[in-house]
Image: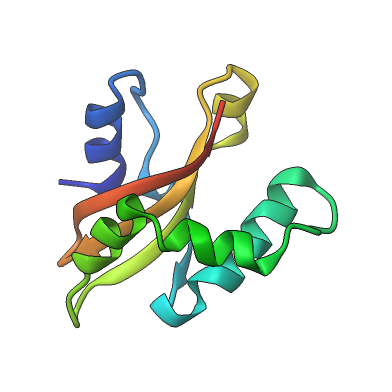
Length: 113
């Protein structure tokens, strides 16, 4: 099942976006905090002055621990962002997804409207 098909099924309101529309970049687990800082800066369209400790605390949460604990050696961790048109309709989402052999294992949403 395609990544966005699965996300769409779980979120129950998306109809016709494709992975090419949403997958932004592959992320290494050891670089997740830097990716989160960059994501926030891009989302807010300004320099991110949020303390790094906030991000460390975020990925220490039970939700993130559960998400990251599912990663296996062959898995890929991707940052996804729905197309601009979804954000304009207040249906935007972005976050991270674990892919294993092209199939979604789990995802976490970091921003949505």
